[in-house]
Image (cartoon, rainbow, N blue to C red; front, top):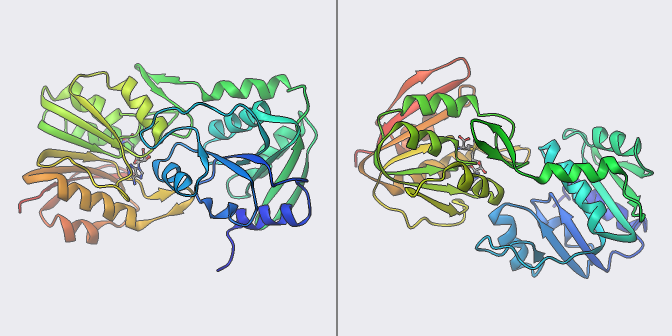
Length: 343
Ligand SMILES: C[S@@+](CC[C@H](N)C(=O)[O-])C[C@H]1O[C@@H](n2cnc3c(N)ncnc32)[C@H](O)[C@@H]1O
């Protein structure tokens, strides 16, 4: 099988001897596919990532993680010989990881920053180059760069650490970098919240709850809700949701529904704005997982409320699992579906 672009760049670094001793203690941030570390012969690898499936995979491979499988913080290892940062879709998350790398890498160790052109690696390297020395190589539609850790950390880089803090975006909603719609409320979710206003009751499940916007609105505008369960795979999003939905009716589940079953059964409503991307890839099977899970946990006459991007063609999948569906609102960019399970 051909290597992914990140693997190719890391193997290139190893082969060229750009990291003088990979066989040491290394921290890796922003990596979702851990296969890229297979052939690097790293002695001890720590994975920093908020996704449940990545943490689970890391533990299976005997790597260190900063959180355990129940989301509890582990005692942190303070310093590493080298740190590798893979840039992510979120600028703030990437700058935060880079700052963290400067703090946790031992003096004379390497800070390695890599990423695809498409995700903006050139932007980060230009920015860092204006602050400190680095060398870089172009490889596999992206770049890999090396910075030797010095005692002095530039002030601007120190400030990027603040991006890792909770940020208030509006009306008491807080987000962390890397969460879905970290800067502002999503237009599609906003439309969905308006559609289910005053129509929800009993037990409600928010699938892929993010930082909790749909649940907060559901509780605000539907006083017949008895309980709302927020299910989400990203730990940072769940942490924000606990702040943004401070109701005793709310229950929080840090779960990846692609890999884990839910104990929830017979709920009256499922509300969801399902994902269609994993990292940079469009993945159609994700919508199927969300629809199947919704069907499993709904009661016989339960209702699904869902928003999706107008450009995405989901009708066949929806029709297969929820033939009793209709569009109840269509805006310039989004469609709102209401579907009764009915069997
Ligand atoms: C489009 S966002 C919607 C977030 C939130 N409901 C809102 O409206 O702002 C989809 C959410 O699903 C989460 N997600 C993606 N894959 C998941 C999975 N396999 N299991 C659970 N949650 C997942 C993502 O982390 C993201 O927060």
